[in-house]
Image 1 (tube, helix red, strand yellow):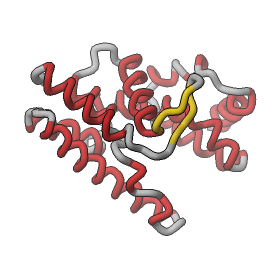
Image 2: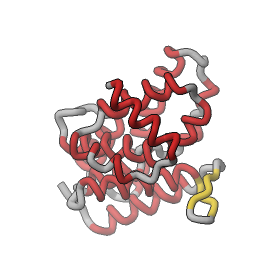
Image 3: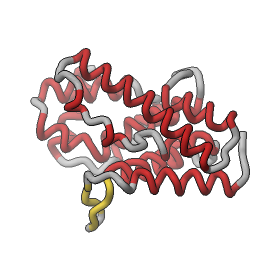
Image 4: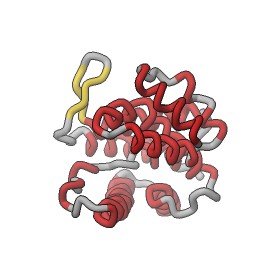
Length: 198
């Protein structure tokens, strides 16, 4: 499934422009970046590491997985488990809807748009191979870039449980990358403990 090079390039450009409006900044490699733009690029990088011949729809889905996420903050929902689940569900719908609007503006075919939205919504996970690659990439981005920050806020037992849940969702191919991730001593110890207790 492919489309004109100009439509694909336009969609990537529009996704990046939308995410560049994120007011939340994150420092990486000595510079400040809009958080969701940085996230989209990191996710794309992992998708391409896991699947160098990734389809256009998979690359587009990676680029818009968290599109404009800052517009629906977690604090808008009750700080409970049901509130969290409702937030996640609403986010997926929002991302898929927003991605569809941008893809149409870029001139993408409807079959491409539907496939990207299905990936946003995890509609055919885990049967769809692209959905598995995307899920693996999401987990590796978490371990590489978000694990340390979460570990500073969460107690050890909860963190071990979170890592175990993450690990179970990863394929063996994705797990092979974990030992080479640039983790600090605390994170590496938590990862080791989680896997020992799994």
